[in-house]
Length: 396
Image 1 (tube, one colour):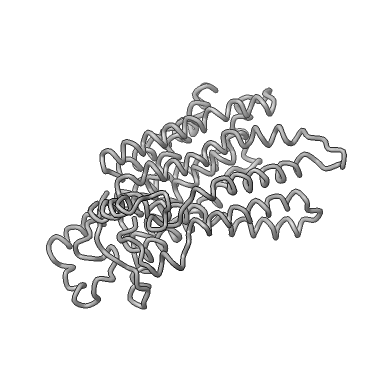
Image 2 (tube, helix red, strand yellow):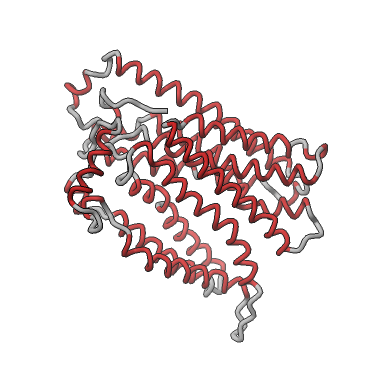
């Protein structure tokens, strides 16, 4: 959560919305290029560039949202961003299946058209949305001066204090040594491994349940899973913002997903319908827990530099869970995929335990601040402390 209105230097020199839109257009261009390639080395090179471009989209988007919304209105907005991922998973496969059947006169295979069409869609939607996206509230032309003042004041009075608009040696050390960043990244690893498992392997798992189904029928069974995940994500976000509570929401999502994994770890003893229902639990719980885990860190960092570093590190390191998911479900383990389910189940249990540790750490720090044991920092380092400011109270 941005603990202060961005400094004039930051507003003038850094334009996050412009950067994000530019990234999306370049990403669309490189996606199109994948459909035009004729060698494996070129494909690997372009995939590397695409990975680099995608890495900054979610942290950058969340960073921008934090400039516009107070502490307890963020999870709903971040969850809406995350729901876009679930919806794309719901219908992206169906779109790809339809495009793959294209037979063009130039002899191009359908897979080429998948990349070309999806790249064009990315560029088109970015160009349509770009005029409506502003970099900072202070530069938003659709906000009147008094509305900008109200927005700034709402962010200031929402229990937030602590600046970090000067990047010096002490502030860098404070950023890179913050235990909250690395512990939350580990929480994300556990949750996102489950999210990626659903994203990458839901069609494969459904196919095992219904071996006689066609690819179109399989996609029709996968779509409702991600729609349910979208609904649960928004429902959990609404409850979290209303209750002004984060940790319990993330914990509840993890428990729902764990319940689904328990069913699949006993799949030899349950019906096919129960196994299919377990996928709903895993997707709904995992997708709902992820924004809660993001916000659990975002609400507890302060200052523009600290926020940017924390979100980049949390999501960057946390995405390592995607590597785990991609390697856990091997074709040799079909049809039960014991190794994959055990791995993701264990990581989700790890996240539950780390959430308790994270909350205990925040509680301890709040206790120290209220007892005055952190007051000396103001004298020693000034007020460029970010969330280490003695008056900044952590929330969970």
